[in-house]
Amino acid sequence: MRPDTDALIVIDIQNDFCPGGALAVADGDTIIPRVNALMDEFSTVVLTQDWHPHHHASFAANHPGAAPFSLTEMPYGPQVLWPTHCVQATEGADFHPGLATDPAHLVIRKGFRPQIDSYSAFFENDRRTTTGLDGYLKARGITGVTLVGLATDYCVAYSALDAVRLGYSVRVLLGACRAIDLNGSLAAMTEQMRAAGVALED
Ligand code: VGL
Ligand code: ZN
Image (cartoon, rainbow, N blue to C red; front, side):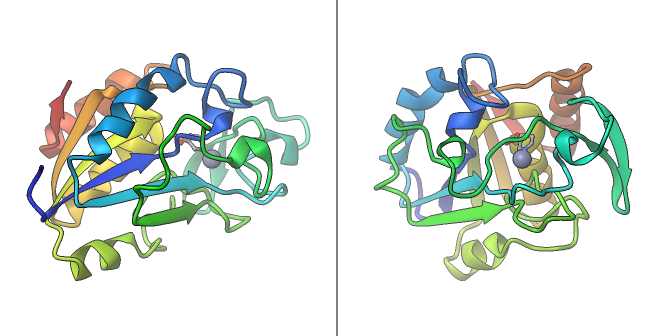
Protein backbone atom coordinates (compact mmCIF):
# COMPACT_ATOMS: atom_id res chain seq x y z
CA MET A 1 0.00 0.00 0.00
CA ARG A 2 1.02 3.59 -0.61
CA PRO A 3 0.94 5.97 2.40
CA ASP A 4 -2.51 7.27 3.39
CA THR A 5 -1.37 10.74 2.34
CA ASP A 6 -1.18 9.67 -1.33
CA ALA A 7 -4.15 9.71 -3.70
CA LEU A 8 -4.56 8.07 -7.09
CA ILE A 9 -6.28 10.33 -9.62
CA VAL A 10 -7.59 8.54 -12.69
CA ILE A 11 -8.21 10.97 -15.53
CA ASP A 12 -11.06 10.63 -18.04
CA ILE A 13 -11.05 6.90 -18.91
CA GLN A 14 -14.28 7.31 -20.84
CA ASN A 15 -15.62 5.67 -23.99
CA ASP A 16 -15.08 8.73 -26.19
CA PHE A 17 -11.34 8.73 -25.39
CA CYS A 18 -10.96 5.04 -26.17
CA PRO A 19 -10.78 3.33 -29.59
CA GLY A 20 -14.12 3.73 -31.35
CA GLY A 21 -14.92 6.93 -29.44
CA ALA A 22 -15.44 10.46 -30.75
CA LEU A 23 -12.01 11.71 -29.60
CA ALA A 24 -10.24 8.38 -29.49
CA VAL A 25 -6.75 8.27 -28.03
CA ALA A 26 -4.66 5.54 -29.70
CA ASP A 27 -4.50 2.49 -27.40
CA GLY A 28 -6.39 4.42 -24.72
CA ASP A 29 -8.07 1.27 -23.48
CA THR A 30 -4.83 -0.70 -23.08
CA ILE A 31 -3.96 1.09 -19.82
CA ILE A 32 -7.11 -0.07 -18.05
CA PRO A 33 -5.83 -3.33 -16.47
CA ARG A 34 -2.88 -1.52 -14.92
CA VAL A 35 -5.05 1.36 -13.69
CA ASN A 36 -7.48 -1.07 -12.09
CA ALA A 37 -4.61 -2.86 -10.32
CA LEU A 38 -3.16 0.43 -9.07
CA MET A 39 -6.40 1.27 -7.27
CA ASP A 40 -5.66 -1.48 -4.74
CA GLU A 41 -2.51 0.35 -3.64
CA PHE A 42 -4.21 3.62 -2.67
CA SER A 43 -6.51 4.48 0.22
CA THR A 44 -7.91 7.41 -1.78
CA VAL A 45 -8.99 6.93 -5.40
CA VAL A 46 -10.51 9.76 -7.44
CA LEU A 47 -11.93 9.43 -10.97
CA THR A 48 -12.47 12.39 -13.26
CA GLN A 49 -15.14 12.49 -15.95
CA ASP A 50 -15.22 14.98 -18.83
CA TRP A 51 -18.88 16.05 -18.83
CA HIS A 52 -19.90 18.57 -21.47
CA PRO A 53 -23.30 19.97 -22.44
CA HIS A 54 -24.00 19.47 -26.18
CA HIS A 55 -23.65 23.22 -26.79
CA HIS A 56 -20.20 23.39 -25.21
CA ALA A 57 -17.90 26.12 -26.57
CA SER A 58 -14.95 23.71 -26.97
CA PHE A 59 -16.78 21.77 -29.73
CA ALA A 60 -15.84 22.70 -33.31
CA ALA A 61 -19.44 21.90 -34.30
CA ASN A 62 -20.58 24.92 -32.28
CA HIS A 63 -18.31 27.28 -34.29
CA PRO A 64 -19.68 27.49 -37.85
CA GLY A 65 -16.92 26.81 -40.40
CA ALA A 66 -14.34 25.72 -37.81
CA ALA A 67 -12.52 22.43 -38.35
CA PRO A 68 -12.01 19.97 -35.50
CA PHE A 69 -8.54 20.38 -33.95
CA SER A 70 -8.25 24.03 -35.11
CA LEU A 71 -7.41 26.75 -32.58
CA THR A 72 -9.64 29.61 -31.44
CA GLU A 73 -9.35 32.39 -28.87
CA MET A 74 -11.47 32.24 -25.74
CA PRO A 75 -11.57 35.04 -23.12
CA TYR A 76 -9.13 32.92 -21.10
CA GLY A 77 -6.68 32.26 -23.98
CA PRO A 78 -6.16 29.86 -26.92
CA GLN A 79 -8.48 26.88 -27.08
CA VAL A 80 -8.41 23.80 -29.33
CA LEU A 81 -11.79 23.14 -30.94
CA TRP A 82 -12.46 19.44 -30.39
CA PRO A 83 -14.76 16.97 -32.06
CA THR A 84 -18.00 16.72 -30.05
CA HIS A 85 -17.17 14.36 -27.18
CA CYS A 86 -18.23 13.31 -23.69
CA VAL A 87 -21.68 14.83 -23.95
CA GLN A 88 -23.52 14.51 -20.63
CA ALA A 89 -25.64 11.39 -20.27
CA THR A 90 -24.42 9.79 -23.51
CA GLU A 91 -22.55 6.50 -23.85
CA GLY A 92 -19.44 8.40 -24.96
CA ALA A 93 -19.30 10.12 -21.58
CA ASP A 94 -19.64 6.86 -19.63
CA PHE A 95 -16.55 5.37 -18.09
CA HIS A 96 -15.07 2.59 -20.22
CA PRO A 97 -16.85 -0.62 -19.15
CA GLY A 98 -13.50 -2.22 -18.26
CA LEU A 99 -12.60 0.48 -15.74
CA ALA A 100 -13.16 -0.46 -12.12
CA THR A 101 -15.36 2.30 -10.73
CA ASP A 102 -16.45 0.64 -7.47
CA PRO A 103 -13.11 1.38 -5.72
CA ALA A 104 -13.45 5.14 -6.36
CA HIS A 105 -14.12 7.42 -3.39
CA LEU A 106 -14.94 10.49 -5.46
CA VAL A 107 -15.92 11.23 -9.04
CA ILE A 108 -15.13 14.76 -10.20
CA ARG A 109 -17.02 15.97 -13.25
CA LYS A 110 -15.54 18.83 -15.23
CA GLY A 111 -16.21 20.84 -18.36
CA PHE A 112 -19.92 21.32 -17.66
CA ARG A 113 -19.87 25.12 -17.92
CA PRO A 114 -20.88 25.89 -21.52
CA GLN A 115 -18.41 28.72 -22.07
CA ILE A 116 -15.27 27.28 -20.50
CA ASP A 117 -13.29 24.12 -21.12
CA SER A 118 -11.73 22.13 -18.32
CA TYR A 119 -8.70 19.92 -18.88
CA SER A 120 -7.40 19.88 -15.32
CA ALA A 121 -8.97 17.94 -12.47
CA PHE A 122 -8.36 21.03 -10.28
CA PHE A 123 -9.20 24.14 -12.31
CA GLU A 124 -11.08 24.97 -15.47
CA ASN A 125 -9.09 26.41 -18.37
CA ASP A 126 -9.27 29.97 -16.96
CA ARG A 127 -6.99 28.47 -14.24
CA ARG A 128 -9.21 30.11 -11.59
CA THR A 129 -12.59 28.37 -11.49
CA THR A 130 -12.09 25.42 -9.15
CA THR A 131 -13.56 21.92 -9.41
CA GLY A 132 -13.38 21.51 -5.61
CA LEU A 133 -10.85 18.68 -5.80
CA ASP A 134 -8.10 20.59 -3.98
CA GLY A 135 -10.43 21.19 -1.02
CA TYR A 136 -11.43 17.53 -0.91
CA LEU A 137 -7.84 16.27 -0.99
CA LYS A 138 -6.54 18.80 1.55
CA ALA A 139 -9.46 18.06 3.89
CA ARG A 140 -8.49 14.39 3.69
CA GLY A 141 -4.83 15.13 4.52
CA ILE A 142 -3.55 14.20 1.06
CA THR A 143 -0.12 15.63 0.20
CA GLY A 144 0.89 13.49 -2.81
CA VAL A 145 -0.94 12.59 -5.99
CA THR A 146 -0.28 9.93 -8.60
CA LEU A 147 -1.88 10.64 -11.97
CA VAL A 148 -2.83 8.15 -14.69
CA GLY A 149 -5.30 8.16 -17.58
CA LEU A 150 -6.19 10.07 -20.75
CA ALA A 151 -4.82 12.07 -22.28
CA THR A 152 -1.19 12.48 -21.21
CA ASP A 153 -0.69 15.79 -23.01
CA TYR A 154 -4.02 17.42 -22.09
CA CYS A 155 -6.02 16.47 -19.04
CA VAL A 156 -3.25 14.51 -17.28
CA ALA A 157 -0.58 17.19 -17.88
CA TYR A 158 -2.83 20.11 -16.92
CA SER A 159 -3.83 18.27 -13.75
CA ALA A 160 -0.20 17.52 -12.90
CA LEU A 161 0.91 21.14 -13.41
CA ASP A 162 -1.96 22.46 -11.28
CA ALA A 163 -1.21 19.89 -8.57
CA VAL A 164 2.39 21.14 -8.37
CA ARG A 165 1.13 24.72 -8.18
CA LEU A 166 -1.19 23.69 -5.32
CA GLY A 167 1.70 22.23 -3.35
CA TYR A 168 1.30 18.48 -3.88
CA SER A 169 4.14 16.16 -4.64
CA VAL A 170 3.17 14.84 -8.05
CA ARG A 171 3.91 11.64 -9.92
CA VAL A 172 2.69 10.76 -13.42
CA LEU A 173 2.91 7.12 -14.49
CA LEU A 174 3.43 7.57 -18.22
CA GLY A 175 2.98 3.85 -18.88
CA ALA A 176 -0.56 4.15 -17.52
CA CYS A 177 -1.37 7.17 -19.73
CA ARG A 178 -1.87 7.61 -23.49
CA ALA A 179 -1.57 10.84 -25.51
CA ILE A 180 -3.50 12.71 -28.22
CA ASP A 181 -0.22 14.28 -29.48
CA LEU A 182 -1.55 17.22 -31.48
CA ASN A 183 1.24 19.26 -33.18
CA GLY A 184 3.94 18.10 -30.79
CA SER A 185 1.82 18.53 -27.66
CA LEU A 186 3.16 15.35 -26.05
CA ALA A 187 6.79 16.46 -26.14
CA ALA A 188 5.88 20.02 -25.10
CA MET A 189 3.74 19.00 -22.15
CA THR A 190 6.16 16.28 -21.02
CA GLU A 191 8.89 18.93 -20.91
CA GLN A 192 6.63 21.33 -18.99
CA MET A 193 5.85 18.64 -16.43
CA ARG A 194 9.51 17.71 -16.05
CA ALA A 195 10.51 21.37 -15.62
CA ALA A 196 7.79 21.89 -13.00
CA GLY A 197 9.14 19.04 -10.89
CA VAL A 198 6.62 16.31 -11.73
CA ALA A 199 8.12 12.85 -11.21
CA LEU A 200 7.70 11.11 -14.56
CA GLU A 201 7.82 7.35 -14.13
CA ASP A 202 6.81 4.39 -16.19
C1 VGL B 1 -9.44 15.95 -22.97
C2 VGL B 1 -9.53 17.20 -24.89
C3 VGL B 1 -10.79 17.62 -24.58
C4 VGL B 1 -8.67 14.99 -22.12
C5 VGL B 1 -10.72 16.36 -22.65
O1 VGL B 1 -9.28 14.24 -21.33
O2 VGL B 1 -7.42 14.98 -22.22
N1 VGL B 1 -8.85 16.37 -24.09
N2 VGL B 1 -11.38 17.21 -23.46
ZN1 ZN C 1 -13.43 17.64 -23.20
